[in-house]
Image (tube, rainbow, N blue to C red):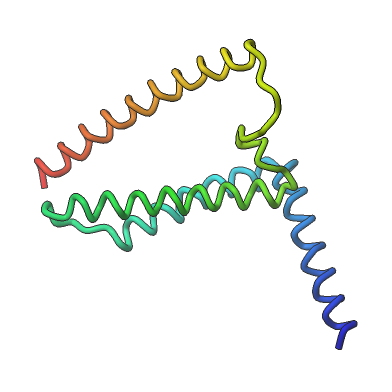
Length: 132
């Protein structure tokens, strides 16, 4: 019984190690991973989203949960690769002025891109509801 358990565990570990190595090196597998992340989120939105104009808050919640699903999928991919939270940019090392200033500039760029995405999304949603 215990031998069967160890065999299954080793087989499972070998599968995850192979998948992690492919995610690190194979461009096709990386592309499939990106497509799957967006496809799963898209299907979630299509499955749970509403076409009613009065359901804006509900649709926002659906998109919020789709974002959480995407983050979980990305985190799973990082863990399969054997990488840690530092690859997300989360670390607890000492911060120098140079690193702090670089991070500050990067956060400004991310903020500008996020605001731009929000504005474009609002315009697209406005056009969608105006013509439907």
